Image (cartoon, rainbow, N blue to C red; front, side, top):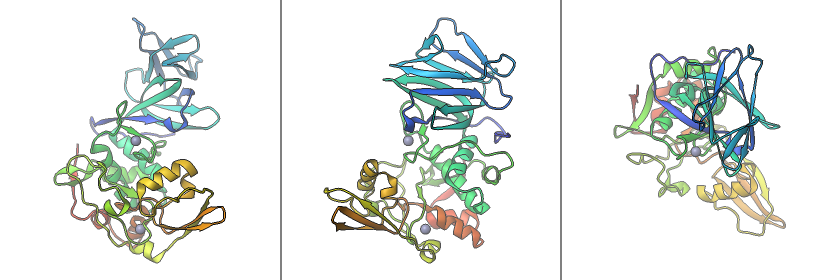
Length: 344
Ligand SMILES: [Zn+2]
Ligand SMILES: [Zn+2]
């Protein structure tokens, strides 16, 4: 498996907190393919090193959380680290037993907090951008839409970190991040073709928001009740409400039911929607534009968008690209008054 988007030169490195959504108590680390992983415990006076590869016969290591310690076999440490033999990036696989596995390309560190493992992968920015685009858009999407998504994902990563123990998480709180695409993937081409390009507002990279399907018109932050949330670093970008022809021409509707005697989530209020999704799941309330009608068991919701509708509409971007628009045109449509700048 060919994994990496090889960096042309030294790049910004980004730390991702991964798989935290699963609150894992156990994680399995394995080198991917023919890679060799050098694993060390961090708090002994003399770091002892385990090597994982075919030759040593050790193919994996199982980490378990015990309070704030991480146990592997008979050894316990406050943290463990893994990397290629030279200390650089390696391809490895992390498995949440019984749930899923993901492949990463980078350096690995693991700690524990109150019985839950905290896995952090440090990777170069372009590998991260590719891993996000691969998670956020279908590989079959038009190339210009993939390029627009790459610029948006990179802008978000460049605008500044959003967590304390690492820079970004791998959920919708920040951006989805899965395994990096193959070198031959169209996603890889889109990332390479836009290398270093980010969206900037008043000269500063923008933590650009985007969403799945806007329903025909994107929203300002005020329209979804997020105008007083500090989402952007630097100058706050005034997200505009722009028309989205693709969504206009391809209307959707979804229906769901929430069985509750409590008041329903407020339409057009992202915080109310997030709170409701925590309780009933995202499937109960996939988009911010909906109407709620009371019935005998609770509320019937009918919606016309997926996501918060702020910034680039991913379906609309794909529609614009299919109609011949380039990624620059797509970006300036959904983010009026921005500029594109290059970040090395
Ligand atoms: Zn996050
Ligand atoms: Zn749209």
